[in-house]
Every structure is written in C-alpha cells, then in structure tokens.
Image (tube, rainbow over all chains, first blue to last red; front, top):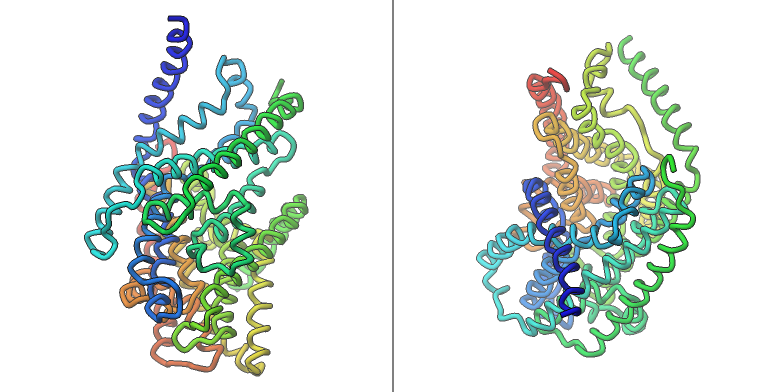
Amino acid sequence: MALFGYLQRPLRIIQTLLSVYYAYMLEYRAELMFWVLSGSFPLILMGLWQEAARSGQFDLDPDTVVRYFLAVFVVRQLTVVWVIWDFEREVLEGKLSPLLLQPLDPGWRHFCSHLAERLARLPFIAILVGLFLWLYPVARQQPAHLFWGLLATGLAFCLRFLMQYTYAMVAFWVERATAIEQFSFLLYTFFSGMVAPLTLFPEAVRTIVFWTPFPYLIYVPASLLVGLPIKIGQSIGVTLIWCLIFWLLNRLFWRLGLKHYGGMGA
Amino acid sequence: MTLQRYFRVLRLFWEVAIAAELEYRLNFVIAALSSLTALGGNLFGLFLFYRTGYQFQGWQWQEALVVLGVFTMLQGFAATFLSPNLNRIVKHVQEGTLDFVLLKPISSQFWLSTRTISPWGFPDLVLGLVMIVYAGTQLGLGLDRYLVAIVPLALGFMSLYSLWFMLGATSIWFVKIYNVTEVLRSFLEAGRFPIVAYPAAFRIFFTFVIPVAFLTTVPAQVFLGRIEVTWLAGAALLAMGLFFISRLFWRFALRFYTSASS
C-alpha cells in the first residue's frame, strides 16, 4: 500500500504536466507543421543517394536508400529537442528562481513538454509519411524490428535530451550556452547517419564514430526499423551507458551550477 | 542625391552594428570554429560520394567543390545580412515598433533589410571563397572567370534576399513566422550539390518551386565556363522578378498593418 502511495504522486504529476503541455502545444498547431517540414534534410539526401545508388558503384540498392532515409526522417522527427534554448532563457532572465521553489526538479517539466509536443506532432508525421508511401510505393515495407526500433528511438530521444540538457547547464556560467549545442549539432549532422548510412563510411571513421554517442541517435534506430544489420544488444547497451554518463554529468553540473546561480534580482 | 543619402545611412547602420558586435569577440571565435568544423563535415559528406569513383554526372571533384564553395558563401551571406534583419520584422510587428520605421523619411523595406549586419557570417563568406579559389586554381581557371562569376552570384544573393524578405513580410498577417524561414533554410540545403545529382522529380522541385538550382549550380557553371545562356537569363529574370515582386508584396502587406494598439 505504501509503495502504491509513492507511485501515485509521480503518476499524477506526469499526467498533469502532460495534459497541460499538450494543450499548450496544440495552440501552436500551424507552427508544428512548419517544424515538421523544416526537418526535410534527410529527404534531400535521400534523393542524392538514390541517384548515386543507381550507378551501382555503392554497396546499396536504391530502394533500401529510400526506406532508410524515410526512417531517418521519422526518427529525427521523434527525437527533436530544444531544451537548451528554453533553459538558457530561464537562467538569463531569472525565471528559474520560482521553479526552484517547487518540489519538483525543473528538468521534468522540460522533459514533459517535449513529450507532449511529440504527441501533438504525431498526426503531422503520420500524414507526411502516409503521403510519402503513397507517392513512393517502393518505400512500403513491414518494419523489420518494430519493437527494438521503437525502443531505440525512445532511448535516442532520452539520450539527445540528456546531452542537450547537460550542455544547457553551462548557461549558469556563460551567456551563450546554445553555441555549444550548435557545435555539437554539426557533429550530430555528419556522424549520426543523417548524411549517409554508416555502412558507406570508410572503415576507420566508422569504428571511431561508433564510440561516440551520435550514431545511436539516428543510425541505430533507423537501421533497426528498416532492417539493416545492427547488433541489437550491444547498441542498446552502449546507448544506455551514454545516457548514464550524461545523466551523471548533468546532475553534477546542476549542483555546481545552482551554487553559482545568483538569479535575476536574487 | 537620394542614392547618396542611402549610402550614407547604410554606412552609419553598419558601423554601429559592427561596433556593437565587437563587444562579443569570443562569439566570433566560436563562429569561426563552427564554420571550420562545418567545412570539414561538408567535405567529408562530399567525399562519401566520390570515394568509390562515383561522380555527379559531369562534375568532377573540384567542380563539385565549387558548388559547395558557392553554397558556403550563400550561407555566409544569409547569416551576415539576411537573418539578423529579416527575422526581426516579426518583432517590429509584434511590438508595434514598425510604426517608427514607417515614419522615417526612408524606404521602410530598405530600413528593415539593412538595419544591421552580423559578423557571424564572415567566416563562411571567407571559407567559401577560399574553397572556390582552391578549386579554381586546381582547374587552372583565369581571373576573368572569377569576375564573370560575380554576376550570377550577385543574382543568386538577390533572389535569396527577395524570397526571404517576402517570407518575413508575411509576419504582418502571421505573427510567428520564424519557423517558415527555417523551412526555406532547410530546402536551401539542397544547394550543397549540383542539381544534376538529384533524381528528376527533385530537380524539377529545386528549379521551379524552390529555385535552389539558380542560387548555387548556375553561378558554379558560369565560373567553370559552361555558360548556358538560357540558365543565366533565367537567373537574371528570376532575381529581378522576385525583387520586383518583393517590393509590390511589401506595399500590399503594409495595407493590412494595423499597428499594435489600434
């Protein structure tokens, strides 16, 4: 009974936060559509690689290219994170202070707002993917490892959130923490598998890249969905380790940062 | 006379902007570092296509580098001149400060488009140019090619400006327009590669719907001395047409502006 009592409070908080943020996000429906469209980068590369694969000089056939990049598009949509911009503003404008008084870590607030936005975004993604499958029949396929793919996508979202929220802690010390995210985003673009499936990378580069967190954000979930060869257990394990590393760093910087934080007018 | 006045105002605007930005010298270092990393990433991305001996139809490695260089310059141009100004139109509309702009004895479109510049785009402008010069030297191109290429490059800048300005102008009706410019930017990414690298449907889209082909491929072609008159004429028509439309559109949009409190 006591255990049930402990669980009840977080569940109620989660439910409340999700419904509040979902309602809030629905206010921005039109913008959500533009956000979805602005993630069209994988589709551009799909065209390039499709054309390149037709030449037969790559170890890849054009239909696989289409499926892979469609999966990249979906994974990218489901793992978009912007917490650093919100957090930086809260710190600079002192809006963090009232949130600190609440008996809830502000991180959960951000996390829930991202989750709720994802729910509001789902219909747009579904419509776009439906349209795409209708126009490109070759892209239709049964997802290869639906369960593992979705799990990896969920973990990718958590990892991306943790990474960005950790960079966000720098806002306690410097004014433009977003510059770090912008830098990291470059690495993310080129090493996550967004510009090309990692199988096309030179052997040496690929080995190094698999030690970084980036391929687990896009390449692994997308490959699981379309059935490119992936070591499932190892990949999930590495993702979890990276999550743990960033979680610990995050908590450390959060403690140090709070001591440093003066707050606006405090 | 008027032209002279506009030049004087422009100089004042930019002197102030640069002086203000010099307060944040560290930011500039970070921007330069980011540009360098992006350059490395872009080269790596291009290398992935060329490493097996594949090449974009009729574009050898150095020639594809020219397109990438033009694209990098275009990004630098956008970061220096376009985004700091045109993304701010929304704020003027939201807060009603557009009133003050309209009252000034100077074209409001000019004021809104040139008010400030941001040195954040300089590294990209320079790196893009370096890339073009490197590829040009390897291909043994003469100085005249560089001079000729300025024309289509300027036309590309003009087209991009006009498109961006029109999107910004729609903020008179739709207050939150920031995301729409993001959509435009994400489509512009297609300009990293020559247009022939895409399948037919993409080519049509990026030529006639979002004219990315005219922004990067056409200047590169002129530079490489493969001028096709129709394409160049197309680029000129497009740039002038879009600029003209952007002026008309701004006047049309202003009719719907009702200020903040009225």
